[in-house]
Length: 249
Image (cartoon, rainbow, N blue to C red; front, top):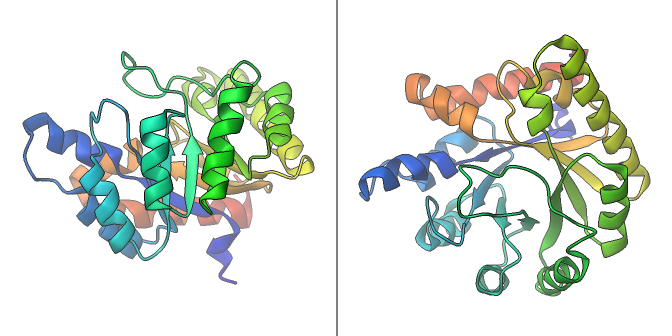
C-alpha cells in the first residue's frame, strides 16, 4: 500500500463549475479540472449536485463517472429527484448533506436525530443500488451514535467550526471535538472522513488525526489553482496532508 493511501485526498471541483456558471458558458470545465486533480495526486473527486443546479450539472456528473480514473463521491440532499439520479448513476460513494437554497455553501451537518426516517430511507435506497454511503455531520457524540444506528458506512465530520475558529485556544478546542468525534466514529464501526473550510494553512492537524481516512477539500485548492494551476495546487495539498500523517501536525 502506498504511504499516501493512509489518508485519502478527495478534491471537490464544484467551484470550477461556479466560475463557469457565472457566465453560463462551457469553461472552465470541472471534468477537465478533475483530470488534472488526479494527475496532481487526488485519490478521488467530489461533486455536489444541488437541487438548484447552481454549479455542478447533470452533464458534469455523467462525464465524471465515465472519465475519472479514481472514484467519484457524489454529495446530495435526501430528495427523491437527486436520489433517483444517484440510483441510476451508481457512483462509488454518496454523501448525504443538508441543503438550503439561500445558503452560499453548506453551513452545518445533518440533523440526524431529527431526520432519522428520511435519512434511513435515503441510505437504504443508496445501499440497495450498491453505493457506499456517508453522512455529513457535526462532530457531536449523539449524532455519531445516531449515524451508526442508521447503518451508514461512513461519516464526514464538518470541520467548519474548526476552520472558522479565531485564536489558538478556540482552534484547539474545535480540534479536540474533531479528535473525540473521530475516535467515537471509529469505535462505532464507521469510516471517518472530514471536510469543509480546510485550507493549506489549517489542514495539517486534521490530516494528522489517525482515525481520519479521507479529506474532502475544494474551495482552497480551486482558489490556489487560479494562480498556480490545478495539478500544482493538488500536489501542494497532497504534500501537506502526507507530511502531517507522517510527521504529525
